[in-house]
Length: 495
Image (cartoon, rainbow, N blue to C red; front, side, top):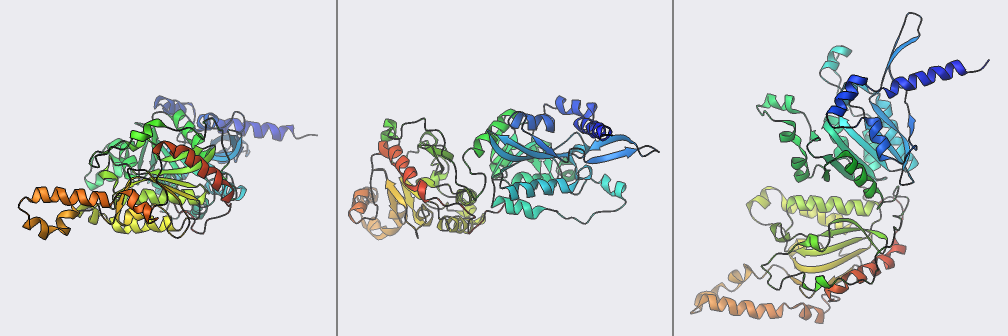
């Protein structure tokens, strides 16, 4: 007597689960240019490392003898795996079963996925395609009742945002609770032309008199600009690669420190081009992205969070949207113990009616507060402008900050441009040639606001050759690496 019969039954059920929604729906998924959930997981994680939980959970039918006839698996697949040799939890929607709708899933699997990642302190990757909420309109007929909305297990999503890296990939149409899962991530990605994200899809929105396609309603360009997602790529394979790269900068949880990566670049390397990167004419913009791309990076192997102003947009002024982006980015750095490097060129908050209508100062206060609440090491490099309240938010003013300024640095309560006319109105009105007088006053004040004058009084600690920036930043990374401390942040990050 052995257990072969039971093992055969188990294998049969597993084979049925691997068929997903059946050949016809799998073909439809492929015809749409999308992988199935099992193909996605196989491509994302290290080969043969996926250990699935709840594989045979689903809806079964039995004959009159109570023998299994068929099994439609739950449309959520999850388990443990490794990515680049590192343990992770991965879970994803199966669009071939009821389009990823919640009425074809088992809620306990979603909750277990989140809780397992939280309690084992493992990064979580969610592959999202579907609604995943309370079900479709048809659910009312199949259940005979309407459900009272509830989001079971959301407390684990909130807890995970302050505990582990949470990555979400929107790989098709994502609505309702699925959209919430995509937004509640430290890093989220959409697939161009194939993904769409919305609270409710086109058929529902059409009742409002807005007849829109999926892309017109919630395509990648709309959601990327709105800040609902962080990135968009052309293919699913690119999305998997970006997810892996993102995780490489972060610890597995707040209880660890970011690991030092490969050191393939000489820390003492100087970049000659930086010497001429900033034009002498303050009215001329320059491309900050040629100096650095905002995001995560490594300095002599140490992961850091890099933040930079972009003068090609509003001259680098902080809009309400910018403030929200700064707050979120700083919170991620604080949560996962990443030192912050900020290349500063901020002429202040954006001004004007649009700025007031979008609540710029309110969002600015939130961003400033997030910066002042940081305890991670901070290095600011003043590249050009530092003006006003937003300019002051280039460091946590209550803690030590390593700070440098390029010779192109300009600072003050407000820029001279536009302020001279107001401050010297009487003198200008009395001058025989107001334009000549304006030029004279501007030249006089420009000399007085020289960064060297500020250095005389130690208002700026050090003015450096731009070509020395990289060696100094590498030194900062090495000096501060031992100061990083694991553990939860006093101000945990929210979705």
